[in-house]
Structure formats: C-alpha cells, structure tokens
Length: 271
Ligand SMILES: [Zn+2]
Ligand SMILES: [Zn+2]
Image (cartoon, rainbow, N blue to C red; front, side, top):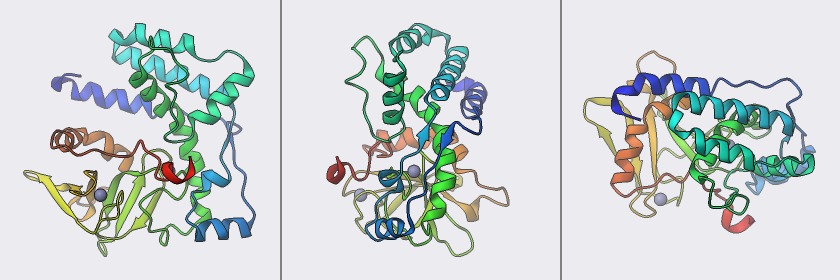
C-alpha cells in the first residue's frame, strides 16, 4: 500500500479484526488438574495437551469474510484470492483436518496448494481467519497457568514466539504478547525471548519514546516493545499497536533482524 493510504490501511485492519463467532464456534476442553500441573512444570504449551475444537464450517465462513475485506481494499488481488478459495477443501472430513491444522501456529500448507497459489496471501488470510478463534481460546486457556510465573520466551497457551512486548509503567515489568492467541505473560526484564541470550539493546524512532525495538546480536531476532510509561494515560492495546508500528518492522528487517513470531518455539523438540 502507498504511504498516503495510511487511513485506508487503518480501515482495512479494523475490518479484518472485526469478525465474530457464534457461541458454539469453538469448544474448550479443560485438562485434569494433575495434567495441568505436570505440563506447567515441564513448560508445555496448553495447545499441545488440549487443542481447541473448532466448528470447521465457521472457520470457512470467516475466511470468506476475510477474503472479501482484502478484495475490497486490494482489488488487484482478486484473482489470487479466487484461486485460493477454489483450492480450499470441499469434503467435510478434509475441511475438518484442514482447520485442525490451520489453527496450530507454525504449521505449513506448502504441501497442500500447488504453485499456482500465492502462499503469502493464503498465510495472511489464514492468520486473520484463525484470530477470532484463537483469541477466545487464549482468553479461556490462559487462566489455567499462572501467567506471572511462566517466564518463558514462548506463549504458554499456543507455543508461539511473541510478536510484541510491553514494559509496564508501575514497576517496569516486561510482558510478552502472542500474536496468535493474544495471551500476555511475564518475562525477564532484559534478555532475548528467542535465544535467551542476556544481551539487550534497543533502538527507538527519533522523537517517539513510546516504542523501542529490542534486538539480539546473537540470534538476530527483534521484538517491538511499547513503553507504557511513555504512552501517557491512554490504554495500550497491543494488537493494535502491533498493526500500527509496521514501520518499525521494516526498519528492523532492513537492518537484518527478523521477527520470529511465525515459528513455533518448540518446533525442534516437538515436531
Ligand atoms: Zn499464543
Ligand atoms: Zn536472541
């Protein structure tokens, strides 16, 4: 999108995140207390023991809505989107399997589509289709662990790496936030959440104290951070802050850093 269409971009993202679910769109299963306790001690994300049960028809309804929003704001993508929609599964059993996989962060669909389909556009559609389900799942499941004590670099609910962080203004505690299920948990004040190196450096944008970008020379990861003390009295909405600070992502990536939010923290050991 062009620079002068920032306002349009604002409307675009607002529509993307305004999809909603019916009450039976998602079902949660609460694991037994002993299972929760053991998994908490072993730092196992809850999605590994009790994934959400998603009504697959509703997922495809939302994906259709998302595709319409994209086409409204980006009419030149209409053809690509039509290709994606027509390649989606048609049989109930295939649809069900597709959705169970789509909600797991880091799972790939490169095997599913032929080269005709633009994976980046599909991933974008998928992210926003998964969002309303995972947000509900995150709200429910995050209450099963003590988020103040999790202190890991990955999400206690879904295992994703964080996409943004918050420095809280009272005591300067740091919280990491998951872009997949929107869970927020406490982490050490300093250090890299990806490789756990103690190194911590950051840059800011001139004149804007509210945002810092912490980067790691060890793994070349970066994380955008909102400094609540510099945010005034306005309430900080991390989902929206992430969308609004895309410029910081461009700067960090240009400097050779990458945000690892798409990767599953437990990829190596679990898969
Ligand atoms: Zn998560
Ligand atoms: Zn690192």
